[in-house]
Image (cartoon, rainbow, N blue to C red; front, side, top):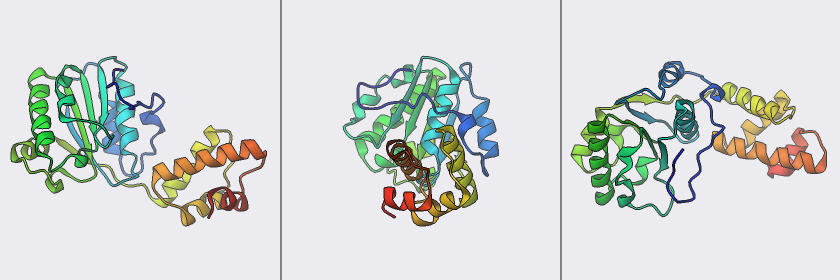
Length: 226
């Protein structure tokens, strides 16, 4: 995988098979059929924070099993519009968090021209945001029309039951036993955002190794300050 010379790292372990499907069966089936031979795919994914959007984007790149791919989260500090120049060379280009640059003229112009070059070249482009194209604060109407012409999927949020299953699956992968009451306590007392839940699980994993203790509700309270 090729990336910009910034502090941007692709999660090489992200996999579509690790994503709890929930109500996203059609989307997952679509992403599974994408591969190194795909050409001219123009896909827009959107969903609320914590729905696993970035995981899906990186997992899609990983499954293509090719070197000519780029993952670029526009929420990353230090990026400039001119960095989009030449990115149409990548066979797969995945741009995350475009809501971060909505309303910024130079960014919108750069993204508009990149979109056109990608389409002309027959490369593949996946763009993601927290809102659908029609609700983004994009001021450049030509860019808005391009985004709305893409194949659009909404990433449906997971239910609390789905999140409990995911927590326990991730815990088991780390060699941890997370009882139902512990997982339910975490969901009821901490953020339901998937990224925050995974961060909390990492903290519990490290603390349990250090203290050689099982993960119980009192242990969770102490480690996470709940």
